[in-house]
Image (cartoon, rainbow, N blue to C red; front, side, top):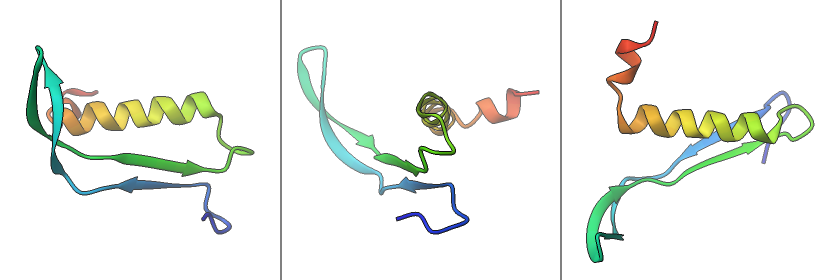
Length: 69
């Protein structure tokens, strides 16, 4: 629930081993769920999706932060 003056809340869940399919095999990989709650009156949905995609990229490769100008 958003409380004024909040515009959004980013939720990062625990990293846990979860089964996924890789090349026809079921393997365990560390995964984390990420959730974003935001006020649709102030934030456009496409911008929110781009933000979550960027968070995902930087979480998977934190070295990318050092290479940005």
